[in-house]
Image 1 (tube, rainbow, N blue to C red):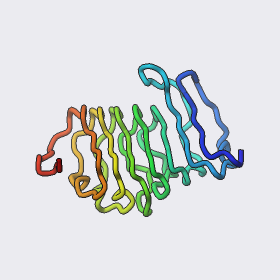
Image 2: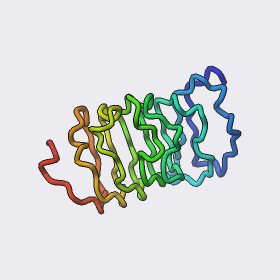
Image 3: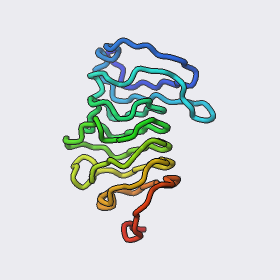
Image 4: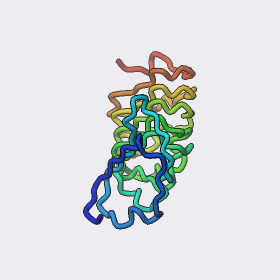
Length: 178
């Protein structure tokens, strides 16, 4: 376990996972964690304890399909995180719990079809680590009503997908650089 750098777990065939709180303590090199569903509809019915583990401060890639909680655990640090993908999750507020005060490398956030996601995101220009954001995908987040216009000031942002965000209002054409 000391040499493990990544874990991929297909949760489409798993009903429930019981894990010891110390499951990842010996995995000092763990940098990649992916819980996903390969079922046709992408639905994830597996019950798994959430990521409250001290080991989740060094991950660079975090993929958790169908994450069941309303916000990220407080031990997830954006300081080292490069890729955050949590489609079909119950997340309402991305930044609640996430340590956003460190300089970091986060460049991709994919929260597609997070139907409960609401706009309580901070202005990205005020947060140094998100200035490197290249991809922000909130496609199908039907509860999203507003979005900070500061996102358009991000120097490296290439992809912003807000398609299917049917309640989203307030964008002016001048915000979009085509």
